[in-house]
Length: 509
Image 1 (spheres, helix red, strand yellow):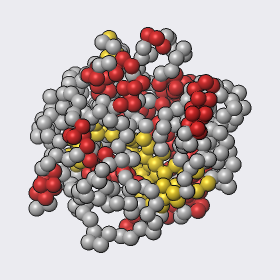
Image 2 (tube, rainbow, N blue to C red):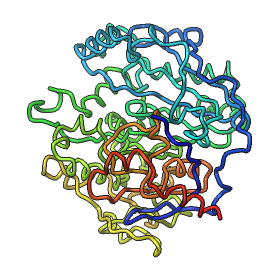
Image 3 (cartoon, one colour):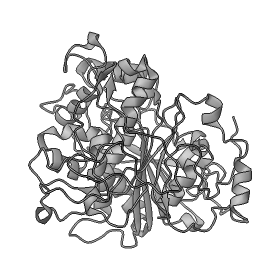
Image 4 (cartoon, rainbow, N blue to C red):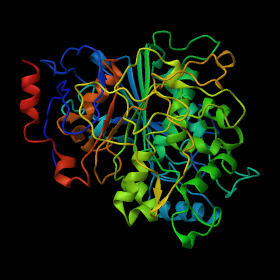
């Protein structure tokens, strides 16, 4: 299917009861140049990591690889780095089956033996086609081959004592670091001015937890910067908002007797020697497995974040067997998880980051609350011009409340810091003061590696437009939560409304 070459306009309209984003004055329109900048190649070329780090290997011991396409024109010093996804394994049996089955299929998820020499980059966020990828088409494109089955977080070589499958390597973290080292050494990323780290599905968990790791390699804390021109570094998470729900079926038994995402998170921490975002690990300590879940992690990450998550995410539904039988119940779980932030104190005994009370200059709009946050009389700030009927949902699982007390009471940007917050002990100012989320009511999963990247929208608001305006700083907050009451039609989720081009045209007059 050929996607139409729509040029994304800077549209800012509210359609129905959708929460809008807070914006500064609009930038220049995102329009195509009269003569598109040339590109050096029409594909991404494969590079081997064995010379950079011999331990940066796939599950089967074959070398990690990545694909690279040099930027051009205005994108010469701008970089988009994608952590690809593809699920996990979590036990000796599941890892053996994953390796055997996928190698027989000549798949990529456990080995680089069958990695092709080129990646065509035909669609989505790495497309070289400006119509499909309006503001990133001529950036330096990096696509990292996912073959470690650990969401890019493992540091467990074969024979690791705690491994559930010691015959295999789980070295996603080393592959991540070696890739960045290679880009700095071999592809002039030392001249980078802009970086957008992204990932999808299992790779989204890697991007969320490795964004700070990547930046620290480029700009070592307390050391000599290796990218002195770096001005903007942000992270876009696609389909990585997995839910920490109880066991999904009675047939799985209690925790530890069958696979669920909490079990996978524990496996990453212990059996794969997983290394999550450093601030999240410092915050949760022994319970760092929680950093697998974006709902716990995002306020702690010190890199600006934007999420795209379909409210009926097909992969999430697959893991949540309770939700898969009741789409609306699943959606309640999903939207409820958007509302919470951090507790006033850390489980690890460290002072909590309080993004709401530390950050100034953000007055709204925020997600509306049916009541103020716990221990505070503050309520969400919503501009008088915005129309919203949303109320705070309740966690549900199989018809029963998920939790009577959410782990992280909401802290509003207008709220004072609670008395238990030790400001003097915590000098780190939180970067992500409110959740930046674009969530259509669609039954789908990943968008960034397909034509869905250019078509995702809520009403007449295009996601690509929001991504662009957020990245350049025009939008300080992006909170587009679709209020359509049920699953939208496939046609509505895969194509723009008929009047979208007219809306673009009128917005430029």
